[in-house]
Length: 465
Image (cartoon, rainbow, N blue to C red; front, side, top):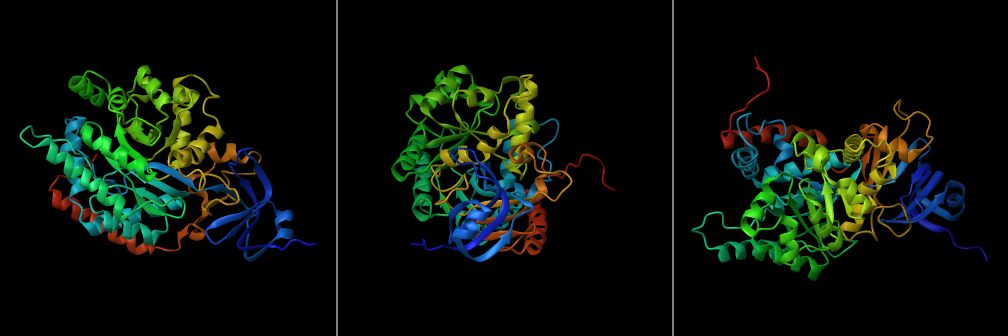
């Protein structure tokens, strides 16, 4: 008896598939079938041609297909509208730049500004093959941002600006903590994460560093554990965080988080350039996720080439992910930069091979986000989040080893098409759901208006005449 054909809405036929499945199979002359928002079949083109009946067939012979990438740490507000504006001058230390420049620029944005900023960030991510992201927790106008993101089609987890430590000794710490916890509870209630079928949701994302009281940390972890969410926060990019925790608690940041019962599998920490071996032990033992943002680390002078323990994290099984931090849009370039950085720092040209780069950008992040059953690989049953990379470019040449070429030599701008939830959100390099020209024009005007409201001076590198 002949089996009924698999009904599909879409069949990508003839592509080279980097599946990222358990066997890490690369399928040449492969095919991928989609029904609704899920992948229903993956295999050789000839086999799927016989077993799949699709409404639409896309010729994939010139493409390498991959799962959608994950940016595990990006500021989708603040940066996209004002990225070219210098934050401080040569006489400002990092703390002054943060308090007098960066934060005022972030907080000068209106709800409409943040919606526009989020759409700019989504456009940039999608253009480089990122289909899922975790926001850095610096959104002030969550409802407007969620509206803008929903229109873009991107998948993400977003959090409001939550600190919760009384910086002024005269303030009531209990009240400050309670207000921060109320924000956490409100956002996860308004935008619940119901698992794989939830494209956009709120998580208890903290600013981190030294800005959160112990009560806020514990509340964030409790919410995450109760609802199957994740806590994400900045920590230890520079020596300032360890110095503050040592002065306050006589222990380093990860030692303190472990001591108060916060460090665990539902926690993802960004930067971690300035942790020591004892903190690495705690990270490994707790199963917490680590997010490295190499562009931010190098541009910010974190010292990662000297003191960063990221190769050691990989060796010891830490779930290590990549983030752009809003400094760059292309997560693949972040992985390439990270590999090059530590190959040089450790004098080991075989360190961080293509497999590690692609795993950090896909499977590792999916696992850390609790979404391994839905994203991160091209497999039947998973979400139809995938990317077609155009190989008909001089930087590709013949495809001999697709993962190696994609990780280390393919052009970042070679993304041709992107699907999220089975919806084509990018076609031939152009967004299908958003009006790119309008958004970019509006963003230029809005960015200038934001800076005008801050009254900060525009310090250009060279004289502009």
